[in-house]
Image (cartoon, rainbow, N blue to C red; front, side, top):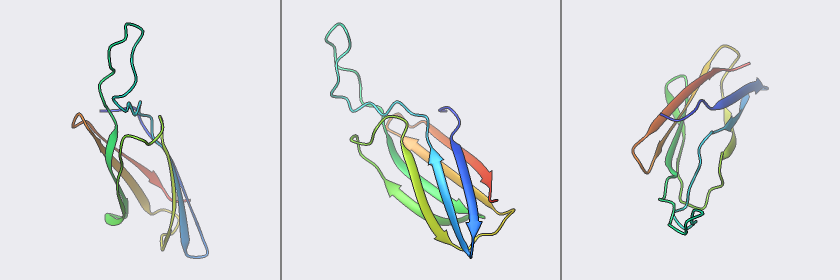
Amino acid sequence: MGNPMKIRAVSKDGVTEVKVLMNHPMETGLRKDAAGALIPALFITEVTAKLNDKVVLQAQWGQSVAKNPYLGFKVKGGKPGDKVTISWVDTSGDTRSDQATVN
């Protein structure tokens, strides 16, 4: 399981804005280490966002997404006190899921 994500969710005028900073190395499999050996690919492949257990975003990512990726999106609905859950799966099968309360 990866390191915790930083999630902020703010609702204003019926729209919830979510900002997520994911802590992940996102290795492409194309870089070499100091000895010249390829560093194995390790990157997030799937991201799911839920607002109160309802899926509001699903994404499939590839190897070209930067280290410690940032994801921002807006969704209609949501109010202070609601829960936003962000989950990801990477190429090793590792998963992470974190939750934040909408302000």
